[in-house]
Amino acid sequence: MKKVLVIVGPTAVGKTALSIELAKKYQGEIISGDSMQVYRGLDVGTAKVTEEEKAGIPHYLIDVRDKTESYSVSEFQKEARFWIDDIHRRGKLPIVVGGTGLYIQALLYDFQLGGKQEEDAKVREKYQQYADLHGNQALWQLLQEKDPIAAEKIHFNNQRKVIRALEVFELTGESIAAPQEEPQKLYDYFMIGLTTEREVLYDRINQRVDLMMANGLLQEAATLKGLDTQAALGIGYKEFTPYFETNSSLEEVADEIKLHSRRYAKRQLTWFRNRFSPYWLNLVQEPETLTQLETTIQAWLEENK
Image 1 (spheres, rainbow, N blue to C red):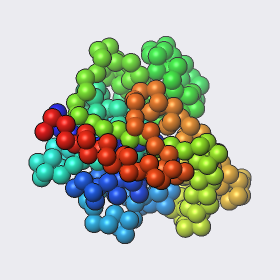
Image 2: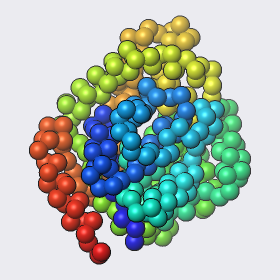
Image 3: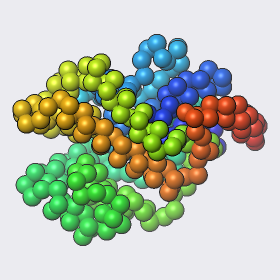
Image 4: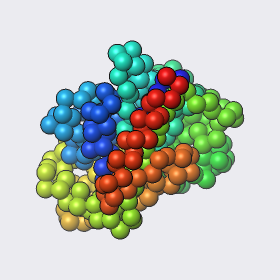
């Protein structure tokens, strides 16, 4: 199986910096596993890697969709696998980096997701209209009736994920949360999980949001104003809606983004702990553990040569 290095973990824990450092050391090229960094023009709110930070390392699946377009797990799965094959053909190491757990899982295992893109969109639109007409609670109850396993794992207010679960169930007859057959591992992957103490993580998230606000997040969010798209529903953007409707202040918006980001970070950690067994590291507080990590990666790379 092809070797793939994977770096996961919650937001604001140093995934980007580590990925570039390891790419330099191991002849790597980076594939983004982030569901929001695919959108062009959404740089500040997604903490997108800058050209300077890339340090010449090729990056893929960043800036590949317009803000008005949707992007599905099945699209990511197909495109990321293409880049893994391409990177391997050139003798480089693919490094998948991101915090979108479902994307990572669907990539590394043989999950069958969705059907033709047109069919996906048609089914998705049907459930979107249902949600618009009846509300999130009714949409979630529909999922509970069809796929109780997925309903148990998805919050009723997470409309996008509820719709995606309904879509997958309708197109495949399988739960997005528990496929009928045990999915098979497709790659010889080594997964690094970055984490840190909860208080430290939350402080880093709060500071990051303050920096985003100072760096023009408002102007970026304004480009999504009035749009009912996947991008507009992302954390860091949807919270501006009350501000644009003159119902809240920028300070209140920032507080909401911080709250939602902290909650998302908690969900990210839970996801990776429940579904994978990463090599966990706290590089924020224990940077010296990087040396042991590099030794472990080297040993993994030399296996089955």
